Image (cartoon, rainbow, N blue to C red; front, top):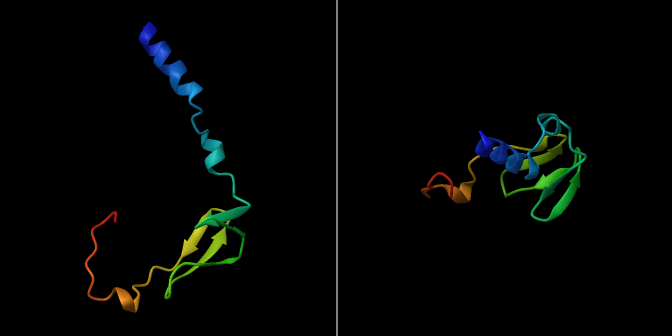
Length: 76
């Protein structure tokens, strides 16, 4: 029982994220080291557009012409 209490104290001391904090809207977005205001367009690539929203970047997911014929491995 003592080991369980120590493990719980260790987890709490690491600063776990409170669920309420996950639902707090952001006031800006960061992409490639640049900060953008809510509603601002964010450059992504030659054929997709992104916009900063209170819940992060929202982007189109179109396949770019320069990507045709390439193979991708998920996660890379």
